[in-house]
Length: 455
Ligand SMILES: Cc1cc2nc3c(=O)[nH]c(=O)nc-3n(C[C@H](O)[C@H](O)[C@H](O)COP(=O)(O)OP(=O)(O)OC[C@H]3O[C@@H](n4cnc5c(N)ncnc54)[C@H](O)[C@@H]3O)c2cc1C
Image (cartoon, rainbow, N blue to C red; front, side, top):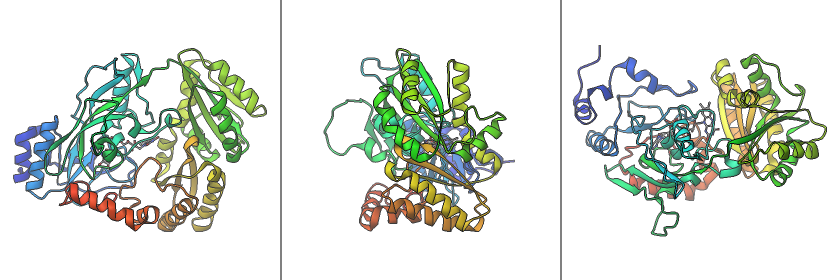
C-alpha cells in the first residue's frame, strides 16, 4: 500500500498525473540504486514529467517545497550521480520522448532528453544518418544523460565526445524558467554557449529536456578485427600507424588480458586470438564502400607477427563486438567493483597501467584488477574487485598518479559523488571557486543534484 500523498506529491500529481508520482518503496526501488549497485539512497518520491512544460512546473513546485532534485535518465551512470543520497526527489526524464523527423538538409535531429541512444541511432539510420556516440549501455542510456556526462564511448577517435554532437539544447533552470535554442544553427556567436555549459554538468546546473543533435553519415560497411599484441606499449606504438593508414577508422578499443579472460569466461567462449597476449585491440573501420581490404592491409603491414581475427560477416562481427560490450557486465557479475575511469597522455599510458598494477598489488594484494578502455584517448577503465578497506587508498594513489602524469581523473564517466574530493587536486582551488560561482549563480539554493561534482 502506498502512503497517502503528501502535499508535495499531490502538487506534482496535479501536473504529471497520479501514475507518474511514485511514492511506494517498491515502485521507487529501481530509481534508488545505480547500475553498479555501489550507490544507493532513498528518494522522497520519483516524478516522471512528459514535456518541458511539465519539467518546468515540477521544478517550480519542488523549489517551493525546498525539495532537492536528482535528475535521472537511464540510470546507467557509473559515479553515483543519478541516484538519491538524502531523500531527494528523483526527476526521471524517461517520458521526454519527443522525436522530430530527421532534418536531412542540416543533418540534424531534435529529440527529447529521455530517448535512449539506441532509439535515436535507429531513428537517424531510418533517414540514412547515424548517431556519432555509441557505447554498451546504448539501450538504456539517454540522450540527456549522455550530454550531462559528456559521454564518450567507442567512436570518439572519429567523432569526438557527446559535447561535439550537441547543436542546441532546451533546459529548465532551477528557478523554473525554460531556456535554450533548438534551431541548430552551425554558426552563432551570440554570447555564452548553453550547450557547452551544460555538457558535462552532471545534472547540477539545469535539467536538459530536449537536444538538437548533429548526426553523422551512416556507414553501412564495416570491417572489424581483434588483434593480439605483446603489450600495451605495442598497442600505443601501432595506433598512429592505424590512424594514418585507415582513413575510415571508427574505433580502437583496448582490452587488457584480465578483461579478456573475464569476458570470455562470462560469455562461455574461447579467446578468438592468442590467449597469452599482453594487450588486445578491437579495431573497426566503417565506410560507404567496403573497408575490409584497407584493414587487412594495415594489419599485415603494422602488426605482421600478431595473431588476429578479422570478421568477414555480421555474425562474426557481433561476436567480436560482444567481447568489448560485455566487459562491464562481466565485471559486475562477479561483484561490485571500485571503478576509476581515467585518461593520460598516450606516451604515459603503458607506464601508467604498469604503475596501477603495482599500486593494486601493494595496497590490496587480494584484489583483482581488470583494465580495458578506449586506446586513442588514453582512457583506461580501471576496475578493482574486492578492494575492501583499501578502496580509498587505492583511489588516492591511482588518481594522484594520473594527475602527476598530466591526465584526467575522469575521462568520460564524470565526477559524480565518487570523485568529488579529488576534484580540487585536478582543477585547483581557483577553478573550483569559479565553478562554485557559476553553480551559485544558476542554482543558488542547490536544488539540483546536491553533493554531485562540487560537494
Ligand atoms: C555497461 C555500461 C557501459 C558504459 N560505457 C560507457 C562508455 O563507453 N562511455 C561513457 O561515456 N559512458 C559509459 N557508461 C556510463 C553511462 O552509460 C553514461 O554516463 C551515460 O551517458 C549515462 O546516461 P544515463 O541516461 O543513464 O544517465 P544517468 O545515469 O541517469 O545520469 C547520469 C548523470 O546525468 C544527469 N542527467 C541525466 N539526465 C539528465 C538530464 N536530462 N538533464 C540533466 N542532467 C541529467 C544525472 O543527474 C547524472 O548526473 C557505461 C555504462 C554502462 C552501464
